[in-house]
Each structure stands twice: as C-alpha cells, then as structure tokens.
Figure 1 (tube, each protein chain N blue to C red):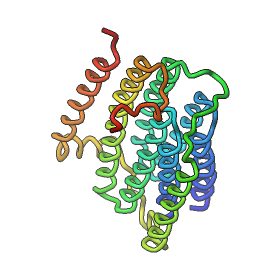
Figure 2 (cartoon, one colour; figure 1 turned 90 degrees about the vertical axis):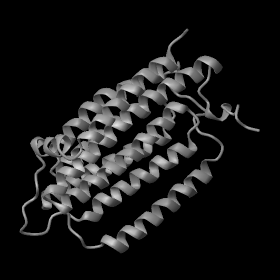
Figure 3 (tube, helix red, strand yellow; figure 1 turned 30 degrees about the horizontal axis):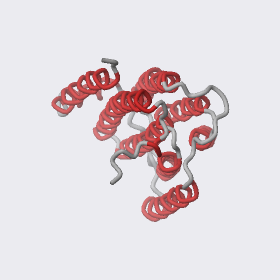
Figure 4 (cartoon, rainbow over the protein chains, first blue to last red; figure 1 turned 60 degrees about the horizontal axis):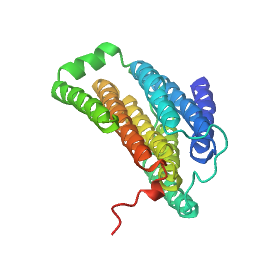
Length: 167
Length: 102
C-alpha cells in the first residue's frame, strides 16, 4: 500500500502541474504535449485502481487518436508555432475565482463525505477488472447503449466530414 | 489508498478544466480543457467502481468507456466546427464569434 501511495503522489503531482500548464502555456503545441502527460497520468491512475483494460483504451483512444486530432486541428488552423499572445481572454481573474470557488466547494464536500473511506478495505482483495468482465456487461446488460454509441460515433464522423469539407 | 485522494485529484483536474474553458480564447485550447473535465469524471467513476468491487467494478469501466467514446465524437465534431469557423473568419478567436449577439 505504501508503494501505491508513493506512485499515486508522484503521478498526481505530475498530472496537476501538466494540467495547469495546459491551461496557462502560451504555446498551443506545448498545450497539446502537456495534455499527453495528463492523459497518460490518468491511464496510470486507472492501473492503480486495477482497471487495466481501461488504461489501455485510454492510451490508444486518447493519446493515440484524440491528441493527434488536436495536433491536426492546431496545424490546420495555422496557429503560429511558438509564442503567441492573446490566447487568454480579458476575464482571467473571474475564471480564477470561479475555478478556485468550485475547487473549494468540491474539496469541502468530498472531505466532509468520504474523509476516511478507503478504496479497498484492509484484508479484502482488490477486484481486478478483466476485459472479459467488461465484455460480459457490455454485450449483455448494456448492448443497446453500446449500439447507440456506435451509431453516435458514425453520425459524428459523417457530421464532421459534412461540416469540415470544402464545397 | 484513500478514496478521497482519487476524488480530490479529479476535483483539481475538473477545476483546472473549468478555468481553461472560461479563460482561453483559442477554440482548440477550449476543447483541450473540456477533455480535462471529462478525464476528471472518469477518474471518479473508476475510483467509486473499484471501491464498490465485484460486479460494479466492471460496470464502472463500461461507463468510463462510454465517456471515452462520447469524448472522441465530441472532439471530432468540435474540431470540424473550429475548422469551419477558421475558414469563414480566418481566426479561431472565440470572442470574435458573436454573430448570435442581439
């Protein structure tokens, strides 16, 4: 448990620093690269929580596909590579106040509600989620939502092509 | 491991994402901040699932998979809209997209 806590602390610190850099850096490409650090950290947290299949999906879909999509978006909108001013709007103070207020409220509620609950109680084995368990619930209880998500992805694909093509 | 450490990490990522959505002017950076928010939600889902154990752990993974799929669709359509805005206005400054202002 001690080793897990140390790994959690290191990864969480890296994730928070990278997340703050994503929203504050002046370089759009660097924001995408810092986003990779955050997403990989989320995958590592999934492994700590014994959800290995989800960690692999996180790496393949987020880092493999979505970040590449972001990089294409940055290059197609011809953002200058390098320092750029005017990435933030004039109401940064309001945004800082809002997010700090939100963080304070969430922290208060979480500490109040779950102050000493453990992820896995002492002496109880962690449930390791296997891909077969996920397949069982995906193709039994959640078959229709699964098909709906497939249809949604197809619709999003067609919609994206229709919106973005030149005609 | 305490449950709260994962939930608080999720809360921090959520707050940072909200800050990004509010403070950024570049549309692509706003979409990146939305991804931060969605990942915060996924960490919470999986942490609660692992704590519940048994059948619920797999269900939490299923829900997180749905969130990942929806996020992929959202980025695809969002970037297409950003490209269209760029083509029409040669800028992706969100403060300039005020055609619906009365």
